[in-house]
Image (tube, rainbow, N blue to C red; front, side, top):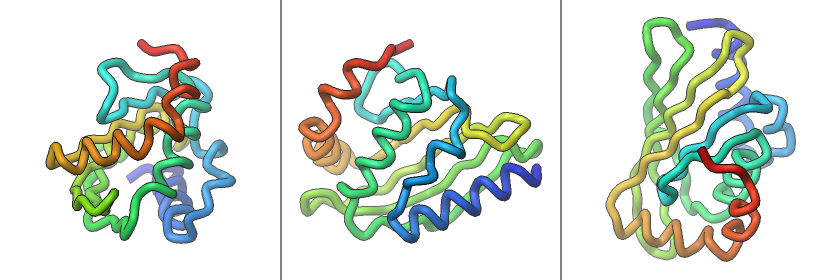
Length: 138
């Protein structure tokens, strides 16, 4: 695995464990793309990703990462997680792509079952819906 990616993921896990994402912006490339599990088109730019991630950490209950996998070049990681939202249990994966400098350039989230995804969408919409709508979608 590329050293800078390993360092970035280590910092990511520390932030999640402490539930403090103040330094998140440092891990993300300015032109990053965020693929939300509830949007048809990706959101473009670091600020959209920071908004989504710093909000969802306060929506998820009992959030836990279970496993992580890497591509052979070490620049793509898949992190499996579980959480609760509004009494619904969900499982998901974060698909994270890094650039050569270890900055996140793509962050995609997939969640199941649909009842957990719907609970997440309902919880996130009043918190970020209007703000995310101001970001460019690809």
